[in-house]
Length: 402
Image (cartoon, rainbow, N blue to C red; front, side):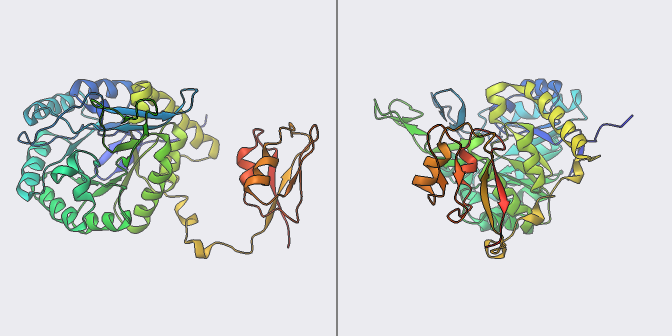
């Protein structure tokens, strides 16, 4: 009998039963919630961000917004929520309870403070001594907190990343991971700053600063708080390409582990993050939409994928796609293909024809009731038609010599 692939991973000092963690967010708002997640099967969790008691926090009403199709399929989620408003002492008590009941699960304490070294050092000491396995420094929150010199205000300044990472390291008795903001020009640069300051790992991405939409009837930005709004943090499927790019760049630039975050909605998304170098992944928005129960599908999907591909361990795929990412200037300029349409599969909808006519190279011929055809002399292999065709495998590539 063939044994099941091993999906356990080691991330810094953490022995994880699977690469799946809950990220710092509403699903990790209390100890009770985290313990329910552990009972459901999550390998670990990052607490909602803990801040010093002297720092005020406000929960706006309302604070979420969604962008999606009319079918209710959601693409992006926006929040203007701040960090945990619960006292540090409450978190210390609950951290101890969680670790007593679930000693084998990974518990990471997310912390945030103002740009004062003594505050970071003290908070790191308190939370690490409470019994967490690792700390995550929240240098990434893009709304609310940066206006007070916290979150992304720190993560956008390499000198502050270094100063406050060193401060947290001085106070912490456990490894320290730095959570980075994608709202920078070069995330590899800020990741390197964290590494140089002694960070044991990085995590990326925090949410992407954006504006989810405007109500065109009331003219109010979304989400609306008494008729007003602000720019907030975007998450969900739409940010995955940004997250993948950031994790890949960090993995290429640093020699410490990186935890992948951003738009992980299915096990396939998680696999993509692992392939570009993530040592584990963190999930939030998908859990907010569908509950802790999705972990079963995540675990089964990854296990079956590894078995189908012939891998005995998830560690065999971590970073496997990184060597295939290179500079644009190094891509093969002599590689030539053209689109090829399978007439037996073509449903004669004309979508490829319209797309190529108005957005491509006018390389597709189409008559009503007949299968579309490609003019190979005109086809420039841009790939637009392949993405719009509703029939899997109908439009493929044919290598040619030009």
